[in-house]
Amino acid sequence: MTRRAAQDEALDRSPLLTVAQAGEYLGIGERFIRRLITERRIAYVKVGKYVRLERSALDALVDAGRVHSQR
Image (cartoon, rainbow, N blue to C red; front, side, top):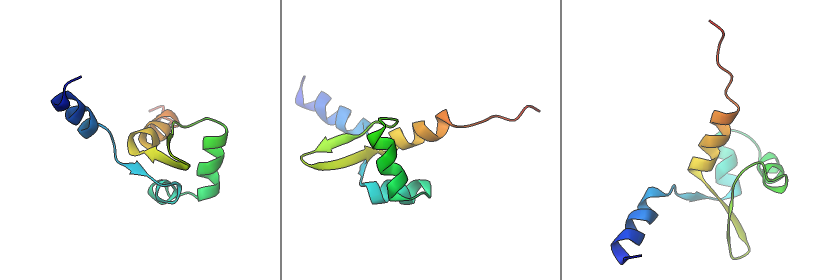
């Protein structure tokens, strides 16, 4: 992979959020975010000992739970 391709790939990714930031973004508590991680219901990234979540993974979680109207 060339350096330019690696830079383009990095720009395509969503920024990484902490568990607290993810909870704030979704309007839910940190505890629920941690439960989603523990149950492997949401994709996450380990950076050393820290857990980070991509904004796109959070948006995918919301889209997966979306219920469309019947009308």
